[in-house]
Image 1 (cartoon, rainbow, N blue to C red):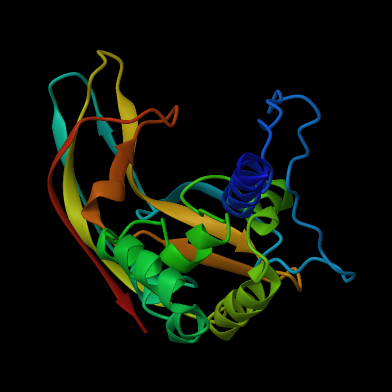
Image 2 (cartoon, one colour):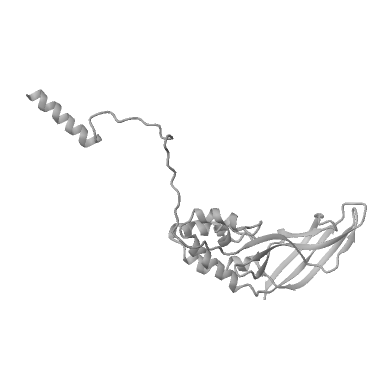
Length: 235
């Protein structure tokens, strides 16, 4: 009887450690695989904005004719209904305060690489990178990954609504050089996003970096530029 008791004890030990004294069945992990999907409760989705397009806003009323090898200095000093990208970037305190600790660390890392362009951090988190065309479809993917997306988007929408009446003064100059034998008219322009908000009002956001200051010819093709000076003042 001792050997039988020993075998039974071994079986109990194996059961305690491994759950079964017998080899486990090996299965194909891909067969019958069920993906985990995010299931949302009812309610309409909330987006910070309806859409946004990006282009180059004109800074000079009158262009200057240039041809190959000839250069012209374009100066500008204008006031427009817009907000600087840098000011919008720094209007995110309520948005950042809504993040949990892990999200906040990731967000601050993102903000640390911001350099004044249209890639505003809090909008980028929501899939609304206004440095390129934004649609609700492009924001929907970001929403599908974040259970708190609608809450964050509501805060971002409020930020945009609060600055919709903003104005800026843009000053500076650049030297544009012609590339064609046929004269063309050069104009100074800056990269600008035009946002349509949830209430269909419009907000223009101008880049705060001289990297986005360009000269375009009569066909809207870029011309070589140098000696850039560029400043944006929020009024």
